[in-house]
Length: 314
Image 1 (cartoon, rainbow, N blue to C red):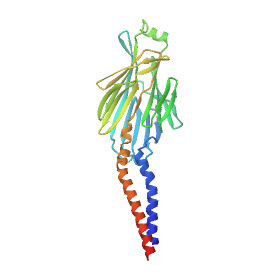
Image 2 (image 1 turned 45 degrees about the vertical axis):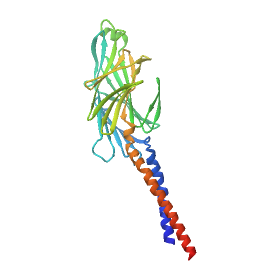
Image 3 (image 1 turned 90 degrees about the horizontal axis):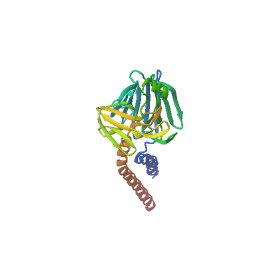
Image 4 (image 1 turned 90 degrees about the vertical axis):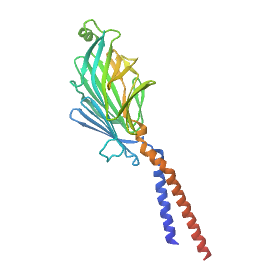
């Protein structure tokens, strides 16, 4: 009798330990992640690594910025050596279109980015800045990552940053009006524009999707997907102005109205559905496991009752 009660007690304890784990798997909550930032040299190599805090998911993605290129890599298991998705975004150049004439303001192959602020860690957010400059313009880029969904307060409004993505803040600064007018002779036209050209590459399919207040380029490989998205508006000299875009032969052009200070906030990351795929698979099995656990519990209770009844009969 004592042996049977001991076995029943062990079964009960195991069930109590197992049920919270199954509940976590059923939720598939990947909102919490462990994020680290590695910097080498003067900032010519930055690695932002994000690892799922949920052991049942075990996915990992890295965003590496080197030279003028963002490389995004994703794999389902941290110990895996192969990647399930890879794509990159390369900043090519910044040009000015004035009266039908294109002038290159910055060539990022010649003017590489360098670090201007070390990572600041606050309230689960990681933030750092890099800069590229020429005689005609400055391109400052702030990179922000998060361990959990966070609301970021910006001068132009609040932005929600999720742990599956990286926020980029492009700040384009051109020379003062006298300098620009002098360089371009007849001055800057009211219809002038500044274009940021980026090359998008992937080992997978590239899809362009536009709509709503933002535009996006999606990258897919198997059942995994990632994205580079941007708002269809930017702050130009303190005013909210439209941003035009075009994608041709894997070159994305973001076209801004001319201004001395332009601020634009794109995002790049891994789609939430890709991050939660393992949790969803586990969640599918969970009802069967729960059914087994409840059946085992009922059987244990029945066995205990029968044992007690038999003992009383004897």
